[in-house]
Length: 49
Image (cartoon, rainbow, N blue to C red):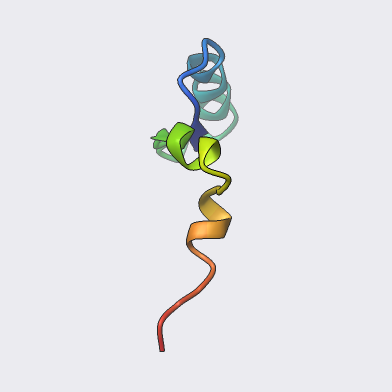
C-alpha cells in the first residue's frame, strides 16, 4: 500500500490488515514519487519489449 509519511499511514495499514487478514500488507513510501509528479501507476506502466 502506498504511504506518504503521514500520521494516518499507520491507521490505514491497520485497517487494511483488519479487512484482509489473510493478506500481508506491505507499505511502500511513495512521498518522493508524489512530490515529483508521479505515482506507482505512472512509473510501472511502460514495459520494455
